[in-house]
Length: 80
Image 1 (cartoon, one colour):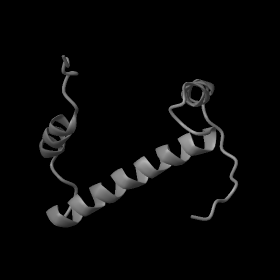
Image 2 (tube, one colour; image 1 turned 30 degrees about the vertical axis):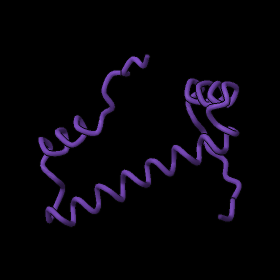
Image 3 (tube, helix red, strand yellow; image 1 turned 90 degrees about the horizontal axis):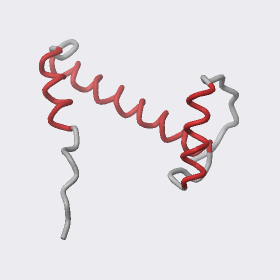
Image 4 (spheres, rainbow, N blue to C red; image 1 turned 45 degrees about the vertical axis):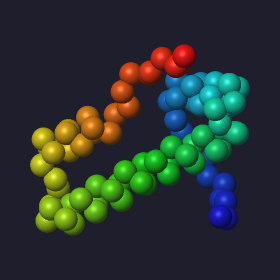
């Protein structure tokens, strides 16, 4: 994928957290962290657009809430 340099302004707290993720090894770079976040937003937007096309408009809030609850991970399971 071709890359393009852009300039964005973010709240300092978000930048600090992103840099911390890079220091911990959770992201290869600040750019990679931001690209992953943007990709996640675009994925959610596409999913919501697909649901809207299936429902003929925005899905009912109660159904979205139920879907979000079912997709949340449960508590960690002890191993051993």
